[in-house]
Every structure is written in structure tokens, then in C-alpha cells.
Length: 216
Image (cartoon, rainbow, N blue to C red; front, side, top):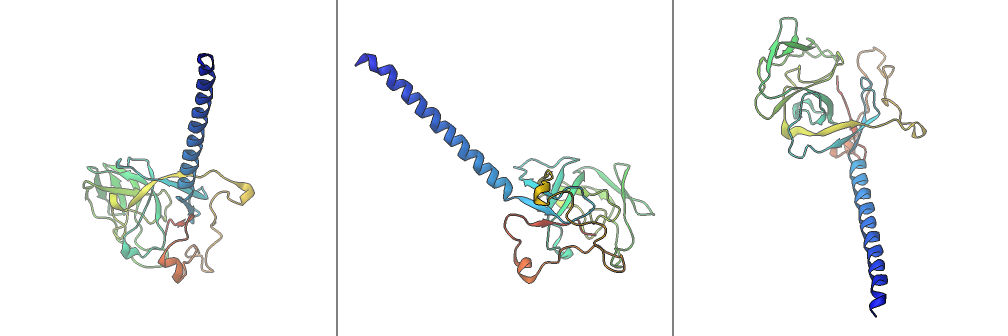
């Protein structure tokens, strides 16, 4: 009886390791599924990636340089979230020059245009200090629709959906670079033709791969 105990112990050890390995595989599969369900398709040709995986902030404050996805103000009536980079954090000073140049703590970051590509007038963001819980979000493209304009303004933390990580190209699936290009413009060349949502789309994005637009 005593001689057989080590055999049972070895069997128990192997069984325990198998259970641990199986649990780890299930956990990894769950993480993978969670990541896939948070992939947003990029609908802006001014960005190099075809899509972004978005991860929750888990209570951490965004930092300068973070790429984030956020919901623009409801007044903008955008059917998709915006992809931007954090350039201003609470406490930084915003200044706007006569020529529309926007500066953060004295450093020029953008120039606000007087009119949008569709002809509507645009007002620059008001000067002041970024308050707690708000962020200046920016994209380097000259036509980016971001915090340089009053109608977007500073993004409250509650509207930031998470940090965005660029997805690698998958050529065999046709996923390589932005899915729209500068050739996707109307006949007047005035504005990019981005995917227009149907009434069903406005009620809610398609599960799994909602688009993300850097509107201009």
C-alpha cells in the first residue's frame, strides 16, 4: 500500500497541471475574444492603420501621446467615434493666435481653419486652462476635426472609450493600411466620401467591427 502512494501523487500532479494548462488556455481565449470584439475599423485615409484595438483605461488618466477613441459631442451628430491623440492634459494652458494657431503651454500644435470643407464656418477653441477631467485631443492632419475647434472642444474623460493600438496589416484578408484613400472624394473634390450609415446603423453599430472616423 505504501509503495503505491508516489504513483498516485504523480498522477494527481499531472492532472493538476493539465487543469492549470486548460484554465490558462480558456483565459487566453477569453482575452482574445474580448480584444476582437473591441476592434474599430479606421475610416480615415489620414491615418495609416486599417483598424485599432481599443482597451479600457481601467481608471488610469490618459497621458500626452496616448492614442484614444472618443465620442464627439452629440451636437456634431457623428455616427462613429473619433480617433485622436492626447496633446493636452489638465493644467495646460491653451492660447489661440489671431491666425488661428493653437498653442499648449506656448507650443504650437495646430491651426484652426475658418471654414470646414463643406463650407460651414468654424470657430477656434476658446483660450484658457484645461480643467480637471478634460483633455485636448488632436490629429496632425491639417483637416482634422479635433479639439482645435469649439464645436469639438475639450473631451471629458467620460467620453473617452479607451486607448487605441494600431492593428497589424493582414494582406491575405485585404486589411492593409487605411480602407479609404484620398481618391475617395466627391466630384468637386471638397470632402472625402466616408461610409454613410443607414437608419439601422444609426440605431447601433454592427457588433465586432464598428468603424471609426476622423471627420473633417
